[in-house]
Image (cartoon, rainbow, N blue to C red; front, side, top):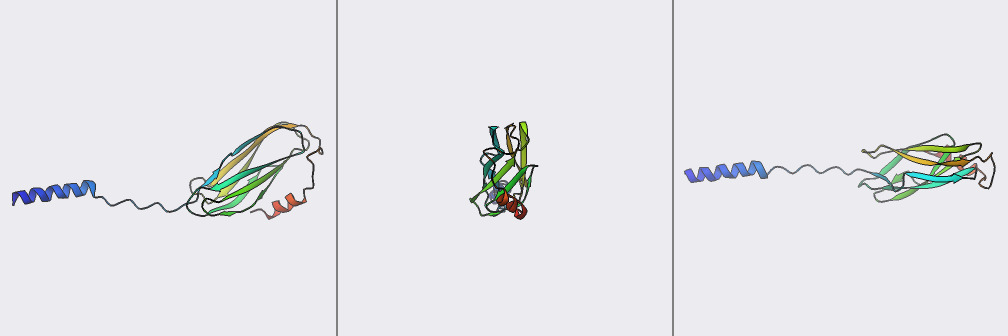
Amino acid sequence: VGCWMLNMGCWMLLSLLFLRPLPAAEPAAPAIAVSAPHFDAGTVTNRFLTHAFTLRNAGAAPLAITRIRACCGATCQLAATNLPPAATTELQVRLDLAGRSGAFRKTIYLHTSDPVHPITALRLAGRAAGTPGGGSGDFDTADWERALRNAP
C-alpha cells in the first residue's frame, strides 16, 4: 500500500507540473506591412511628386483600411481597401509642391483593422527646388481630385 501511495503521489505531482492545459490558440488577426514606409525623393524639380507605397496583409485574417489621412498638399488613391491574408495593394500618393522651396516632410496616416498597429504612418521627404506652379511635372488633376472625394 505504501508503494502504491508513493506512485500515486508522484503521478499527481508530475501531472501538476507537466500536464497543464494547453494555452488557447490566438485568434487570427490582420497585420499591415509596408516594405518601405519612408520615401526620400531627393531634390524635386517638378510641381508634383508622385510615389506608390506597397501595402501587404501579413496577418491571418482579412485587413480593412478604414481611413486615410493625408497631409496638406497630398492626395491619395488606394487600389483596394480590403485585403485577404498575403494580398498586396498600392497606395498612390501625389504631393503638390507648387510655390514651395526647401526641405519638406509629409506624413500619411493609414487607419486599419490591425489590432497591434491600428494607425500606420507613411512619410515622404525631400527638397523642393522651388517650382512656381508649373513645370514638367504639371498634369491634369481631375482624376486625383475625383479619387480623393471617393477615398475611404
